[in-house]
Image (tube, rainbow, N blue to C red; front, top):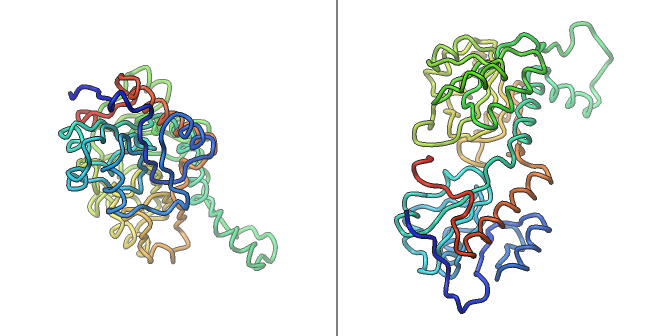
Length: 336
């Protein structure tokens, strides 16, 4: 592992470039501690802008909207020694190439666990209880009064929830599902310890295919890695029951979005709640037309508390690095 390096000791403060607007309290504290360049208008920085920033900065603070590949890192200046990512996921950063060039990468794990789990349950409720349809009817002034057969959804209690990815967020989703009386199942790269399984009342499936065929709701909580890309591909999606619902608050690339759209349109899957998409903000337009699909603009971590805590972790990682120590949230290739 490359040694932790700081910049020229004659420099009083690290040069830090932040690629997007962060909460005011975070930006203010960053400005107090470091020589900071902020993104005042919050525009998504272009590839050329990111390369220019990496040529003049000691530390880059990117977000999920910034894709940093090997070619860009090859253009980075000798000063760049730390990429302090604002977010837990680092699939938008070529961590291997960064480490080969002596650039450390840190992230902000664990901060938005509860917020993202809340959103997963919100999407489950929204889809199964048809909340957006009712909201649209009320806002359009079309409601004609209560009817015994109108807006019929489904009860959560007793439904089988299959969690794909049982890390921090997956376990937080499981705890919430238990409160709603759902039966929790999961598929994970590694089985949980028996005491954790018992606490979560969760059933492990070694075979993802077998789990998918038996679930009423699938919640995707797996990170995007080469091994999880299109993990829910067309073949696996066809294993789902026609009454099943798919929820994704993790990474859009885990699901084959075109295959999911085709099956939703054909009625082969009952519904979906998506907070992330395979191609970022470029959403398949056919998804927007479907009444059984709830689409959100990547809101899973969008709480004031969560975003401030993410910023605080970034600050700690940079300050620890500036003091000549290993950042506490260092990402190493073996973790990916």
